[in-house]
Length: 98
Image (cartoon, rainbow, N blue to C red; front, side):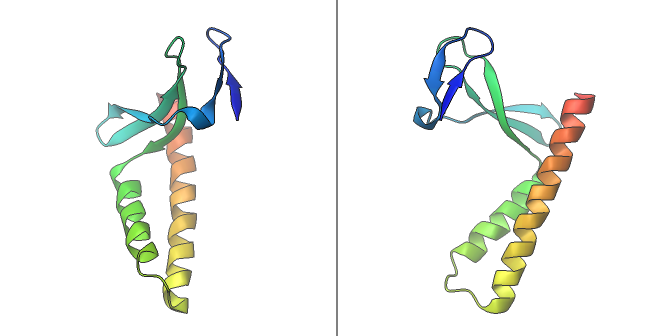
C-alpha cells in the first residue's frame, strides 16, 4: 500500500516499513506508529495499554494451542472482539484528550 506523506509529500510503500516504533504517551499507554522514511512524520498504527497487552498475550497463548476446542475458539473470538473494542475506545480517548 502506497502512502503520500502529509508533511513532505514523499510517496512510500507502507508494506516495506518493517520497524513499527512506539512512544510512551502517559502511564501505561503506548502509541505505536510508522514514520515517513523521508521526514520521519509519524503515522499512528494503534494505541496500547496494559489491559490490551494482557488480553493480546492471552490471545497468543490460545493461538499456539491449535487445534482449538469449540470452547477455546469461542473464547478466542470474544477476546479478539474485546481487544478491538478496547483499542477503539483507547484511540478515541487519547486523540480527544491528548
